Each structure stands twice: as C-alpha cells, then as structure tokens.
Image (cartoon, rainbow, N blue to C red; front, side):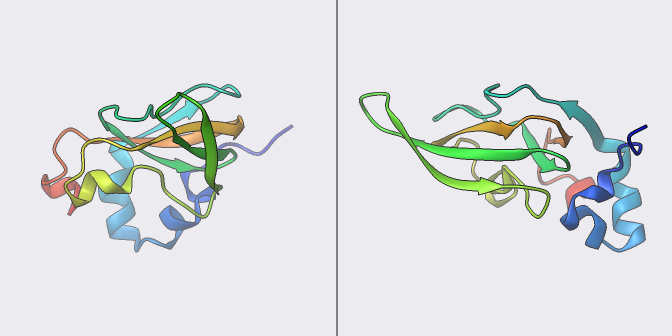
Length: 117
C-alpha cells in the first residue's frame, strides 16, 4: 500500500517553519495530473502556484510558430508559478507534467494577502 500523500513531500514546503506551513496549509489542495495536461499556457493568466510532490513538471518555451523547446524540469525541490508573488500575472512558457502524479496547488486570489506574506 502506498504511503499517504503529504504536502511536505515538496522540499520547499517541508523547509517552512511550522507556523508558516500551518498558515498556508488551509490553502493547499492536492491535484492529480495526467501526462501532458497543461498547467500553464504561454501568455495565460496565473492563478495557482504548484508545489510538485510526486510529479516532475516540464517547462517549455513556445515559439511564434507554435513549436516549443523544453527549458527546464522541476520536481519536488521546486515551485511553479513563483512569479505571481513578484507581480507577474502571466507566463511566457507552457508547463506540463513530464511524469504525472501528484502536486500540491496553492490557489492565489490576491498575492498581497496576509496569507502569502
């Protein structure tokens, strides 16, 4: 039987002080992903930050002709969508699971909110 899913499988979430993690925990949601499911589309509006736990995400730069090239990969050591906290609300890249499994999503309504400070 597989171990129960835990947001602390993401190293960034695991490194947070307990008080900080407890403040974010009510806003975290487990998301299961399929291979090739688009999390972010180039030019699309950012509304979630993703903390991969058991998935690996592939980040692609999309060219003008629609072709793309992988520019980065990310596993449970990272976070996808951090630019939302730095004032960015779109992304120039497409993000899809390379190895689909689970990730933890943090829905961000207002990044200036006390919950995200």
